[in-house]
Length: 228
Image (cartoon, rainbow, N blue to C red; front, side, top):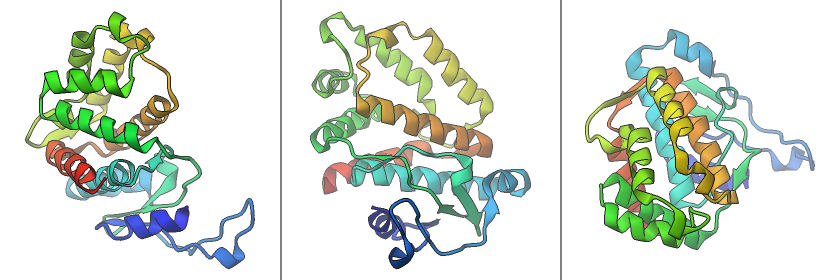
């Protein structure tokens, strides 16, 4: 699987997955090439903001491309799994990946594209098809729509947006206040999707990244539907 992921991601700019020496690997041991890079947190402390923005955009582009286009969810987005070299990310560990159902992932992609484009009626119809809720007849979609808007401002504003720790804290507060969460279905897709989001959000906040997240989201989701 790492070999497949490497082939996918190494075609993208500003991301690199080390070469795996399959002849040296064993059942519980992976041997890969040694790459000298900077620890993620050290990079955060030393780098200029332009470099931090490039790295954050590389993380967003590569991992959403992997998830929505190739249906491989990377659920271990932790700072220890990344090195940085010349404003390029090096991903070291693929111990936690998830393969969502392809048909469901297509519906989710359509849902999120409708959401990012502000098409509430389309998103409402897709919401019931995806199966986010335990019981659609007892779920307040309007409240859920408000919750999504309040926790995804970076994806909705078609201009540069700063993803910092204050913004991440506001997302956490909205999550605690959201009364409909008890009515959401705890499926494997939803669980791994949450792990993916929370992990990457923590990285973005460390970087205090600022760029046009909306453009990247639209491009990735539209490409996923075109190629999927």
